Amino acid sequence: MFVHKYDIMLIMDISIFLARAIGSFLLISTLSILVRYKHFVLIEKEAVKNPILVYLSGFSILILGILLVLSHNIWVLDWRVLITIISWIVLFKGILRIFFPELVVNLINKKSHNQLFALAEALFFFIGFYLVYQGFLNN
Image 1 (cartoon, rainbow, N blue to C red):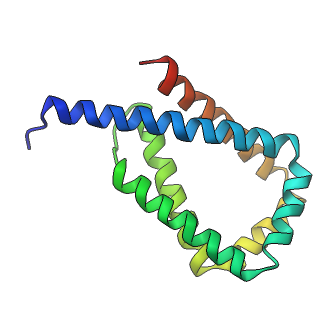
Image 2: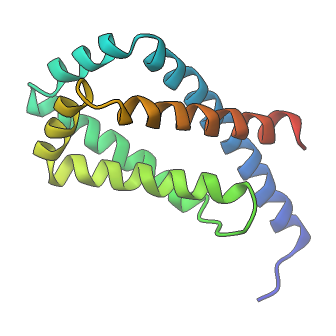
């Protein structure tokens, strides 16, 4: 299949846009969670007491995941694969919330006792930083 140079430019534009958007979101959201970790865990525990909130968040995350995967399913050996992996993670997170809401409740209940969740937030902070770098500074 022949890929036109304009198609490659469009793919890069989408990648740069998503790197900026996802990177900015990850930086802001993970930093706020890390700074106020216990507060966010309490909010999540309260939220999952209402099954409607779990399902609504699941459908919101699902549509976001579908849109991300459809717009950026690019499996290449460079920074853009991070966007693709994150897109699939978002999609699976939405599916899990809809089909297995009790799993979400169990995971949130474990957050206050397991520091691996905070470590995962820190990892996503650095991924966000890297994506912001790629999207804003390295093009």
